[in-house]
Image (tube, rainbow, N blue to C red; front, top):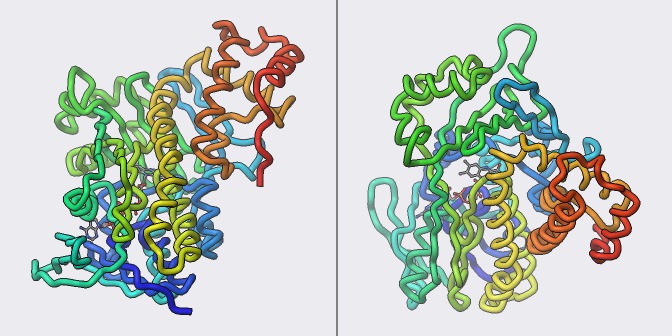
Amino acid sequence: MTRQAITLIGGGLVGALLAQQLAKRGFQVEIFEKRPDPRRVGFTGGRSINLALAERGLQALRTAGLAEDVLQRAVMMRGRMVHPLGGTSGLQRYGVDDSEVIWSVSRGGLNMLLLDAAEAAGVKMHFGQSLVAADLHSKRIVLADENGTLHQHDAPALIGADGAGSALRAAMDDYQSLGIRVESLGHGYKELEIPPGTGSERFAIEPHALHIWPRGGYMCIALPNTEGSFTVTLFLPAHGPHPSFDTLTDAAAAASFFRQDFPDLLPLIPRFAEDYDSHPVGTLSTLYLDRWHVDGRALLIGDAAHAIVPFHGQGMNCGFEDTVVLANLLAEAGRDTGDAFAEFQRIRQPNANAIAAMALENYIEMRDSVADPHYLAKRELGARLAERAPTHFMARYRMVTFTHLPYAYAFERGRAQDILLEQLLHGSTSADDVQLDAAVTTLQATLPPLPQLR
Ligand code: FAD
């Protein structure tokens, strides 16, 4: 059966995966993508060079039949390798074994794989076509090509996967207010590179970890790339007193700051000055909308609907989870896109809000708490409770990263568990101070069992 025509704006990570899934379900899908075809001219991303793929994203890729292909080009990360200033580095494992790991993937490589898959499923692609206007009354859009030439296109059902700066969102907001709110984090980021090792070691540091250099108000992280390099990201206040991007105006100032704060990292980045001076400072914000859709005419998905800060490594994963929900709803709805769009927002918005909040909290955890003794005691007590009473305790990070439990559930349950851990620890910095049998009894009396995992 050939279903309705759907016009997608944006062929990034979410747009390409959604297009493939819709085409596989019989929809006639067209994508208009602003950039040139990355498979022809190379990927010109502008944002993070690599990303962490976790279970939710993987599950969507399994549904699309693409998980194995993606994993073949990914580097396994078993946990956080924490590098304290002047201390010894240590691995904090994410799960009990290698069944609970996350994967570092190249943004460009993944985008190209998804575009290939979408094309193979029958999606019609138009590159170098930027949405400049959308008239939702007449259901027509205006696109500009690379020379600035404008042309119009009929689009009875529009989906915007055009990212955090979505042009479709602006056009929808003109038609009917979406209640847009953007909250800037006030911190920015800059990417640097640790090149592949010379000699016998392909990787200069442990390859199977997400490295963190926590420094309280700021941090560096590094994710491995298959060819042996690491992409390092410095997260720092955008403005204000030292250290901020305001005060680190050039590579010389930044190098002196790194010598002080990241002395073990600086020697691993031989092109520090070139990277620092040539790479832009990225901005970080959370986007909230009251409405993600207008009638059955247009809907937003992925970052266009709910851009979040990157500290839980879930923006893409959440967007990938969106694609499965939406493709199923549209397939069930037949031609009534209005119901499917409304239902999509009803299901996904509370979850998007929950992961937005958890991502903000995780920044503090990553840059500060991972080196804090009370946090480590809580983590250890949580691990002991999870081992003794797995039906009643699961770390929030694990619920978010390794299960399909709704984000909103993970957020609420995590909060309840955290209150309990605080009560049990009474401010102590050692999990050994807590009598475990009594703690398990309190846990089981206080919280209902966790849902069965699929
Ligand atoms: P995008 O990836 O932004 O794609 C939008 C597409 O639309 C682009 O191809 C763009 O060219 C196109 N477009 C834009 N405007 C127009 C227009 N007017 N007309 C036509 N096309 C247009 N997520 C994770 O899950 N794990 C991570 O580890 C992670 N790390 C991150 C690190 C950083 C520093 C940042 C900034 C983000 C990170 N994210 C991570 C989040 C992730 O990058 C996003 O959630 C994801 O890219 C969203 O995909 P998208 O397709 O919705 O948007």
